[in-house]
Amino acid sequence: MELKKEMLSLILLAAVFAAQGCSDRKPEEPAEKISPAAAAAPQPKLTIKDWGPRETKAGKGFNMQPNGASAFWFNTENATSTTVVVVNENVLPTVVVNDGEMVTAGVPASIFATAGEFPVYLLDQKTKEKSNEMKFSVK
Image (cartoon, rainbow, N blue to C red; front, side):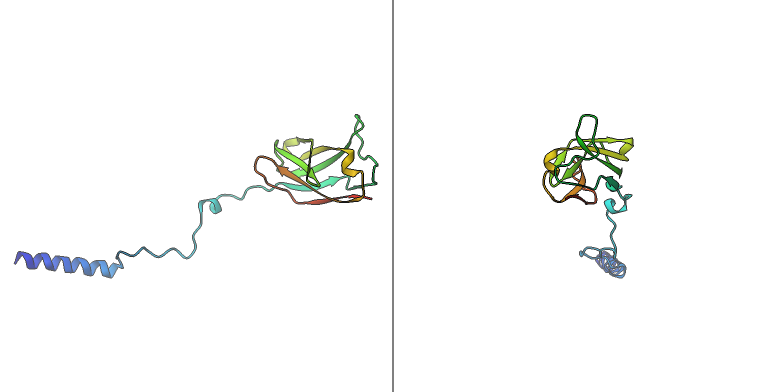
């Protein structure tokens, strides 16, 4: 009699598990899964809002500084102390001020010695984030 009760209990337990959908298989994945990274607030993007000068004549200096060097200025968003200006894959000596809203960079004469269109962007050397790309025109 004891064996019959034990067997009946096992059968009832199996029936309960079956009714609840329990088995050795893994539960179904939810239709949409949100990763912790995706759930976090979006990170601010490094952005050039305005900049200048945007063009010059070949060999002619521009935005001349007291030391005789040419210079770019950038109105930016989210620049950091590790942000640099890159022109035609050349990293320029860069200064970030006003809590990342303004960036300036000295421009060597070799950058504007010959005519052409050259890509200009900001690069955060720590995170490797690049800003939107602009074009510097040398005529």
